Image 1: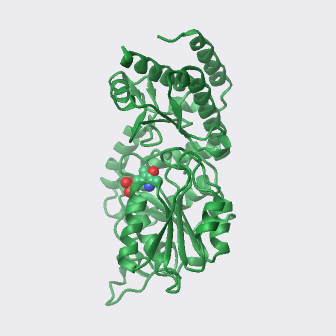
Image 2: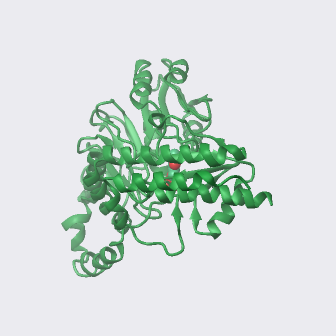
Length: 413
Ligand SMILES: *Cc1c(COP(=O)(O)O)cnc(C)c1O
């Protein structure tokens, strides 16, 4: 067993950081999870807010149960756009009228990729990367097969992710779309969104960002940086709950220009015209397809309020403090056991999670879960420490890292 002398110092440092944390009061806004001592998976499924049971009950009793179908006119018809604007304002640096909430991330990626792929027949290539999340890669392959486009694969450094130079070397006057993740789901590497977007535009290509691991934790300026299209999850750092619908951003200048393929009645100019032919809406509603999942849009609203109160810059500052502490603890107690750091060391270059690797981590994760320490495991041998800033303390972070060390050591016995 390794020496435990640094444990007390790490815990003291964590307590001091918690005491000075301007956002610490928000920890109490989240529901308790009996038996869980460290929840390190808020980047996969954010925790519910404490007031969710009352909010859900009130929704069933009043909005649905009493107002009945009148609620569509009174509030639900506008909800995909209203919530989209709110996400845009609080988390994306997007002016109103460019973001909607709908469908799953996968479906929205398909719609936007398909629209971008067809935008200019002279452009025949999609640029994506080999390390991106599977759904993004699979959808690109599907869109390529459907449209006859060719995929040009980037093979970036697995820890540091895609660079501006990688993109510049791959794009040309054949590129229709460059589609990348802002924060890499495995390494946590944070891409240079303004630099890469500019590099895609230099070649005349459209740029789309997957914001699943950055929305609600890393500030961005979609409008100012000229991003064309973006999609992201709401159940990760926006705490919308399992299966809450995704959001899509389409900048004003492309609305009415690009055409998405699932042209259901909610995307028509006049939903209730019920006319013989389809006329697409000229505004952001054109990205919708059918009736939105209203119940699944409830939970994210409270989280957006919390992020707004904290400011996204404040959330990011706490996120960097948490991940820096996790890396310090890694250096002190995990590196000596042969654990690899699979995330960038500089917090300016990473998002909200830190990934570490060891051949025994699959088994270690299973045992940690049984003990109420919940990180997640990513093939082949990575543990992601997902530190959702508003719901995670520094002490919880250290508790998690020390538990990984303990589980790893008992594994050797
Ligand atoms: C979580 C995640 C998704 C999830 O897509 P769903 O359609 O919600 O299942 C997609 N892309 C990335 C990068 C993700 O991290």
